[in-house]
Amino acid sequence: MVLIRSYSNRSRTLNRGMKLWSLNGMKSKQIKLFIIVIFTACIIWGWDKASRPSVLVLHPDPLSLFRPDHTKYLHQHPSSEEDFPSEENFVAPIVKVVEKVHALPPTGSNSVAKHTSDAGINEEESTLDKKECNYGKGRWVADERRPLYSGFGCKRWLAEGWACRLTQRTDFSYEKFKWQPEGCDMPDFDGPTFLKRMQDKTIAYVGDSLGRQMFQSMMCMATGGNDTTDVVDVGAIVYGFTQPVGAKRPNGWAYHFPLTNTTILYYWSSTLCDLQPIDISDPDTRYAMHLDRPPSFLRENLHRFDVLVLNTGHHWNRGKMNSNKWDMYINGVPNNDRKLALIWKAKNFTIHSIVKWLDNELPHHPNLKAFMRTLSPRHFFNGEWDSGGSCDNNNPMSRGFAVSNDSSEDPDADGAVRGTGVRLLDITGLSRLRDEGHISKYSINAARGVQDCLHWCLPGIPDTWNEILAAQL
Image 1 (cartoon, rainbow, N blue to C red):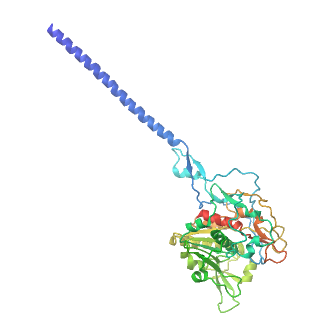
Image 2 (tube, rainbow, N blue to C red):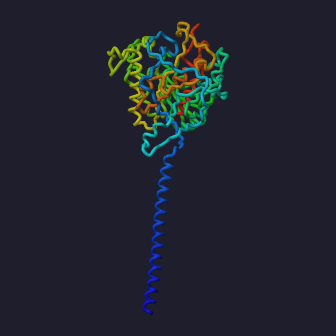
Image 3 (tube, rainbow, N blue to C red):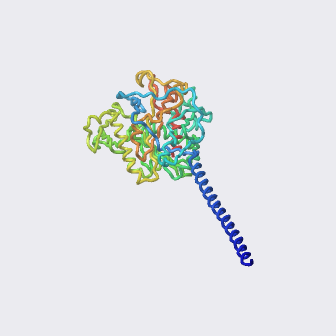
């Protein structure tokens, strides 16, 4: 009986141990299963979160300007800036520039885009959908805070013939508009702020008289039109600018702002070619126009510049070449290529040549930001400068107020800078809408019946060119 009772007790103990082991085993399995479920849920949650669209603020990239290869261009008949000489007419395809737009969606102050990524799309491909800032695409908007300086002031910097407030013109509504690029914000220009940004820097404009207008505009904008005594003329001392015998004006100007150690200068080079007398001993010598050689001024002073703005266009005509006694040269010898002798081809060749040279120089000047400014449009309607052509419309935006093209209207400049470190300062399309902003019949220097539909009133459209430049900097 004792043995049976002892055995029975051991059996009960063994059964309880087996049940306890079984219960512990069940709990272990449940814990493992619970951990697997939690881990799987975390993975699914993480994948789901990554696959959802996210909103990114995309900062504008002024270097990314795109133009389809099939873009056509309305080639303006070239003319001189000063005296409108005889010109060579070109036949070129015409492109429909901008339709008059009656309503546009509001433009925000920031460029915001949605960027969606999938697990199967790599990051490089997904960035192709980012919207870039194109300063040449946008619209003109009314702004009663304009102009940026007084048209009655700025007499130290502004040529009298370009200050339309000093002429017989009575309508100045063209001054009350600001350019708003699509997809990006262009802050209002403030002279002191800009000079502080340009501390210890030199800004150089090199080109024709449309470049000189841009230079004078910048001087007025930077100073607010005030004749400040602390701005020093350093043109002759530092850059050797002089006024040649018989010339109307010096070959350049340069002004230094001691407070910020900033210099703003302009150098006259209407074609961006190096011009050299063929026979220096002959007072009536002709000049070698080296299409493949930048002006000596650029080669000698490029190391001084932090910002460089180039432009050319309206001096490329037979009348100007003949009156200036210019002969085309390539590789140091007279050009014998009849195709290249065509004016428009020579101009395009020169633009590509100087951009290529500049692009090769940029690695040696890492702080230099170089721009090729596109062509400033002319607005001679119902004739040319010498055949009754006029631009006396005073109605702003009569031809539309928006540029909807993604591409530049100056394919020569656009094509030249493509793939280089030189940037495009695209002002052609936005300026083409502003035919009411020219000096027109109010010029104080033109002959009777001749209107200036090439130069702009200041304050005016060139101020916008400088605002875009400042934004791209």
